Amino acid sequence: MSSPKISVYSLSDLKNTTDDALPNYLTSLKFQQSHFLADVRLALGYSAVVIAGVTFYADYKLGWDATKYWTLWAVIAYFILNGALTYWIWAIEKGKIFTGEINNTLISIASSVTKHKPIYNLQVRYNEPGKEPQVLTLSAPFTRWFDSDGYFVATPFQQWLATQIPVVGKADPQKVDKSAGVQGQGQAVEAQRTKGSEEFARPAAEGASSSGARSRKTKKTT
Image 1 (cartoon, rainbow, N blue to C red):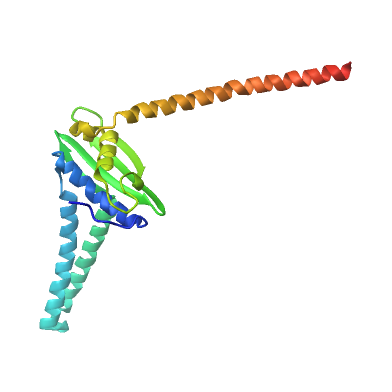
Image 2 (tube, rainbow, N blue to C red):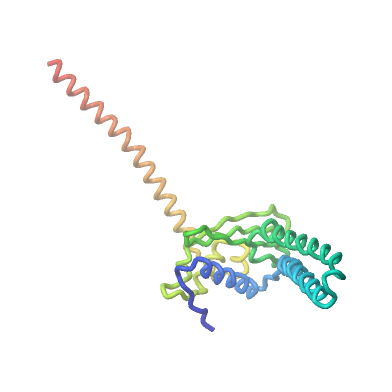
């Protein structure tokens, strides 16, 4: 089944499509997804809606005078629930799109984008048994897994995840891009070489400048 076409100029569409693809990929690798965060959010939201609906129905059937006392408490409860929902979304969920585990390794992944920048950002937290918790901050352009027509291409996205996140790479070693590490080392070596060349060239240039100055001074004296 092919992915739906989206507008490559819509940052929200790019993010939402990618957010939906990430849990689907991880669950296909036998990651056990936890729905606790989503369940609490839905419970808070639906509870507020139920209170509003019951209050409206009671007022419609019994009239304002008979329900005004209960309406006051219903309104207070409604605002408390909405406040709790807002806090839960912004302070607890914090953009998390996946929480779960595999082989007793806990993992949570949060996504974000910056306005007017088509870059997908991930913050990955995982805790393997007997080891210190790890935090990874990843980013990549959406063009890495969206083609020019706006279709999502799963393989590059999955390769990026498997290569950058060790827990995912262990679960799907065939998707790990082994050349990425070699390329990264090569770039680091090249940068070091460039830096060394610049540092070497600087004293040489200074030496040549000093030599030229001494030569001009000698000619002036003669």
